[in-house]
Image (cartoon, rainbow, N blue to C red):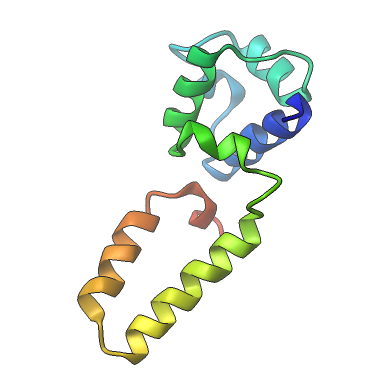
Length: 111
């Protein structure tokens, strides 16, 4: 996994959550470190990456599956599942998916 890809993903998620670099860094590292990580110039250690992922609401493994699981495919798949459950009148299961995914930053600013 290229550092630039991890940094871009962190930046993307941070912006979707309307966090500044300083707010993301709080309790983890410095704002300057977040800036360098987002530019791909600094390799975050495992502990920092874990704490960043928790603050951004994603599993740390999310950063290592960027190439194999594009965001749009994930969003599209969730939408298909919810639509299918709605058609089948499986409202309880549909709401389970919604309650899980409403914590996912990928859906925050998606109209």
